[in-house]
Image (cartoon, rainbow, N blue to C red; front, side, top):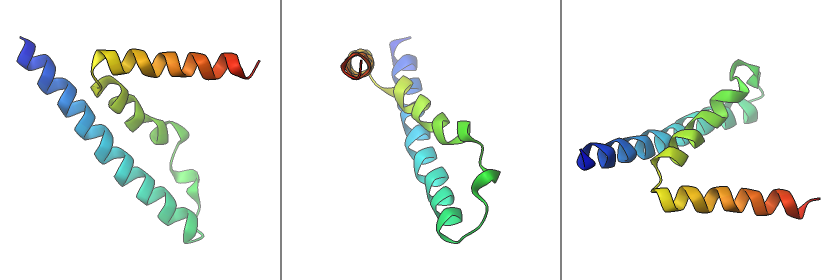
Length: 76
């Protein structure tokens, strides 16, 4: 069962990285060509990052959460 978890995390990481590349290339193409970027909803720009987060090993996920906590407390 451990191999299934590792493959699932690897697949999430792969889908996330490919999603970032494809979605952001399309977004910047629309942006720089002068076309309307409102055809891409805001959550489509965030979705690949969710896949990347859940594809990370558990200790990296915890360190990302700690980093966000430190950033949020520093601004107050």
